[in-house]
Image 1 (cartoon, one colour):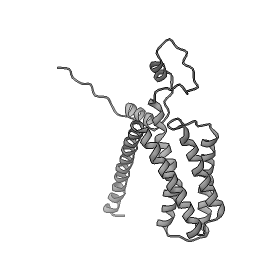
Image 2 (cartoon, helix red, strand yellow):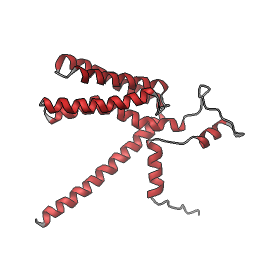
Image 3 (cartoon, one colour):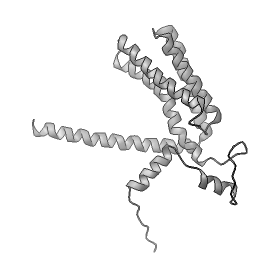
Image 4 (cartoon, one colour):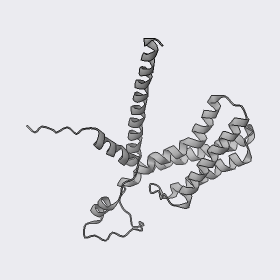
Length: 199
């Protein structure tokens, strides 16, 4: 093994670190955009769902996918649309959310079986997985942080039983679970904070 081959392994490690940081920065930016523009995010995710449904309908006439694969994909998109009814609020134990996760796993299993039996180029396999399986769940995952800073409405079922005003109690009592809160926690715990000098 030459020195240049050892250097190539080190270079690969550096490149993986750069790609990881770039993906994390992109996810952080997307999470902030979704948090700022929740109405537009809902519209974009709705368009993604309609696009995936259209792709599955086209697959019926153009590809030899099994009916279980197509129906599982269409069912997952229907559950994704049902999750969007209460957007940006997502209940993790709701039947729609749990059903979408189960259908996502089942769709992966069926797709792996199909692509193992039928040869397709790697680009076609990745196109199916990216556009039909991963795009909408990834968009929903990024949008989970959108409900962290949404003001309470009269439709909310939780009762605010404190002497504080509604907004202060809402922000202090809610546990923030989402992508943006995870990145903020990582930023606060990993990166040192600089003290600003007052002149």
